Image (cartoon, rainbow, N blue to C red; front, side, top):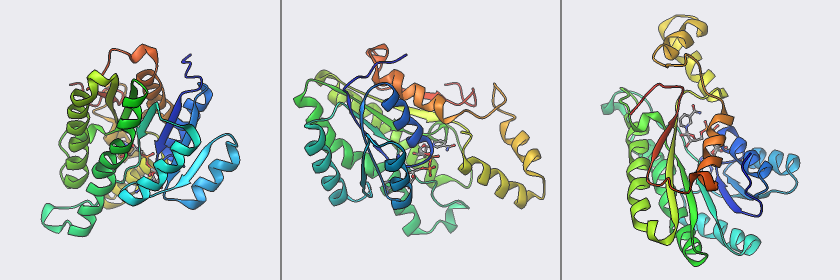
Length: 256
Ligand code: NAD
């Protein structure tokens, strides 16, 4: 198993879903973990269930909120070794001419700009301590084409471009920067999408799920733990030579 004893970790959007499971994985590996989220309820529940964890309310798309978040993290940890940019939203769907400009801006702000705000504070901390790891949550939508989901696809292609460029920029400082591309993850969000698309097409959710999973080599969804395991690998000594990579954890829905 991975040993990250004492490593100081910040994970965004980690009060629920994949981020929460990543946080639990880092805690189990011995790391000191601070999570942030916009959701008060989810943060409260997490802080109750994981008493050792630091938890802050912050909207990472807002540079001022990120400044406040990093002030708290620096006060708590005195530095930072690992940043996991996980917070993300699915964005609006539909034909390009129907995309609402405000919803588009929000998608870019949460899915892309937030990574800039967080890295702008995390990178100097990592440079000061001789290195670090940044893990960005992209999606297979950042490498494939998805009709009627152009905002999400554009945002996630952007995450991969940001990841590869930042990796080059900070590699000599000992900072590794990688992106994880989850495929269909077995979460309530996936179930909701399947049910919504099944209702639109007038088929059962089971039929819809079979159709969605047809192009997946392993024929199944992946679990949040699979994503967390990749994050742990990238942030451990095993991942020491890996930087600037976009790694799919998707059961083989895309194979580039
Ligand atoms: P989720 O919606 O279950 O959880 C995301 C968390 O981020 C929530 O707790 C939410 O409150 C928080 N959040 C949203 N906006 C925020 C903001 N502005 N500031 C701080 N926190 C914010 O999502 P998830 O399915 O766990 O996805 C996590 C990441 O993985 C996202 O970047 C997502 O795009 C990516 N991803 C997910 C899937 C999937 O199938 N679930 C697939 C591919 C990629």
